[in-house]
Length: 166
Image 1: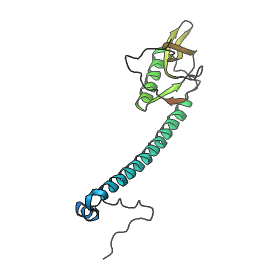
Image 2 (image 1 turned 135 degrees about the vertical axis):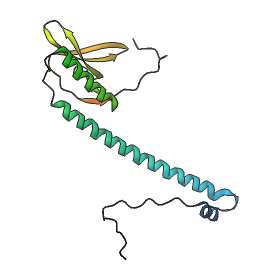
Image 3 (image 1 turned 90 degrees about the horizontal axis):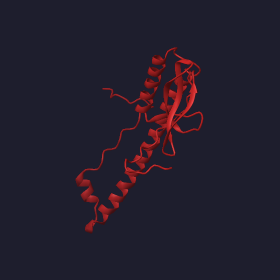
Image 4 (image 1 turned 90 degrees about the vertical axis):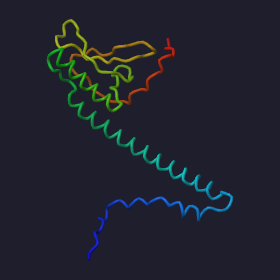
């Protein structure tokens, strides 16, 4: 009978770890072989983790660029009402937060949250970048239209007891 064949581009199977009998046969008296194997296993695990980290960074970059490309199409628009613009900003922030991202402030470059604030003379509100600089909450922007959106990694949270600069 014909055995099923793997397609030529399929990944090779993952070798199974040696069983306990093989390890016992390979070990030298006094446990020196076990120490060498432990070091080899640690090196293999370290290499695997490094590969995984590179792959995760690549995937996160692809996600960031894909989201950024879609959001760029909204730049220069408004939804016409304060409530609609606020809901848009909230939805964008919710999506970015789920992926560990923030928008980059066009004024100072700091990671920020895009918000919509009411402003006299702007019935649909204005888009602002909400962020903390030197320990102080700061709002930059104030445009009626959705600003250009660039994405950056969300900064790590500071521990609660840490003193603020300034």
